[in-house]
Image (tube, rainbow over all chains, first blue to last red):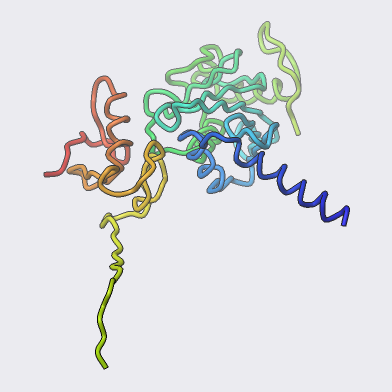
Length: 180
Length: 84
């Protein structure tokens, strides 16, 4: 009897969490669908620090080929109330030697800025970010030094990436180890 | 036997005829409504572009109004022109 009562109580508590009085916002409804339909490549995983807040999460990319094979890179996603009319704000939380990611974690990916359109999803961004690690693009760079090395000496660029992922200095910048 | 019909209740169904099930912008069903509306139907209609892509009118208008320079279809990036 006591057990039944506490079960009922639990159920009621659960309900208040699911229906917090106000309707879900358009952004919440849409991100819910994005997350449900998420189809991640085996190199990616998402992590929700707060299960009740789908608008803030992390994406971990562990490339299994290319220059960055073996590394582990974390991105923070912040989805605003303007979603999907505005793209999520994505920042790289791992210090990385990459032509299209600066040392503050800003990411240069067309679909995160000028080429965003509301039919794109979280999945499209995941694939876009993964592509940046497979094909760093030295044109239109955010880290100019890395881009110049990639353009002038691919071999040296490869060595620099390896060195940075093992933990070490490239020029005056120290990169923390990010190998798996 | 004589039957007198005292009252009757008609039931009708409707649906939008679109080439897709969901609006690409809000991802809600076309037979439902956009997230800003409560009642599906004529108050939350669908519109087509000349490129043949279809959206809730509220969703596509919100997108077009946020575009400063070119108004493009969010599916195919062709210039957006309403059909008809």
